Structures are given as C-alpha cells and as structure tokens.
Image (tube, rainbow, N blue to C red; front, top):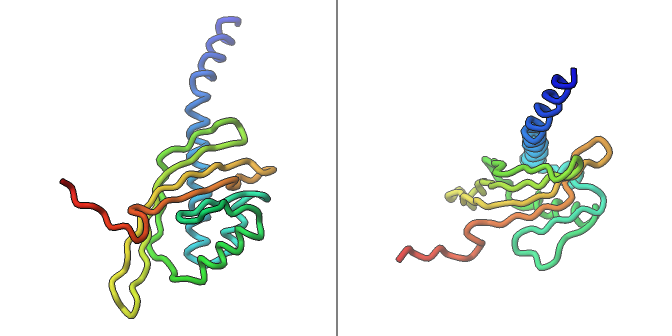
Length: 160
C-alpha cells in the first residue's frame, strides 16, 4: 500500500507541471479568442471587460501606462473608432502558470488594415506580453503590452 501511494504521489508530481502548462495555454488561448472577437466586432466594452479592475495596458508608442477601467475603456473606444482591422490572429508562444492564479503569456499577433480609397492593405505584425490573473472564477488580464514590428514609421534597414 505504501509503495502504491508513493508511486501515485510521484506520478502526480511528474504530471502536475504538464497539466498546469496545458491549463495555462488553454486559458491564454481563450482570452486571446475573446480579444480577437472584441476587435472583430468593434466592441470596446467587451475588450475592456477582459481586464481586472485596476488593470493596465502599455500599448506601443504610449509614454505612460494606461491604468484602470475608465482609461482602458477610453483607449479601446479610440481604437474601435479607427480603421477596422481584418484577419486578426494571435499565436501564443509561451503560457507559464506562475502560481495557481497568475499566468505569464507571450506571443505574436498579425492583422491587416484596409487601404484608403481602395488602396492596398497594410499588414501589421508584432509581439505581446500579458499577465493574466484569476479574478474570482474568471481569468482576466492584469497587464498587457504589445509592440509593432517593425515599429510604426521606422523603415527596416537593408541587410549588409
């Protein structure tokens, strides 16, 4: 009996990290799906609702973190008032459960902005980093930052 319990404890210890990693990846993918859906619908309220109270956003090119529900909502209101992106996709590169209530996530995104007056679309790619937390029984974003690659208004240098 003692040997069986020891073997069971060892098996759980060895599979625990794999289960946590799978759970973290699943959680992050679900949050990302909600993020993309809010963007696709132009729904600033749904976008802002992905964040905890007191959450923060550090978007590319902003000199100060955007903190709190009202300020995050204003950011997303401005974003949905602009050109509507198409083909928005996110890919999770890392989803690490730091503890049972905190996930560190990073990955990439890609989307297209329609051209003006029927012109060619602009393809945009970048990276993101998010800290997701369990808020009650719901996973939400505590903090999120993203970077555009290459940065806006910076032309890539030719390889030498």
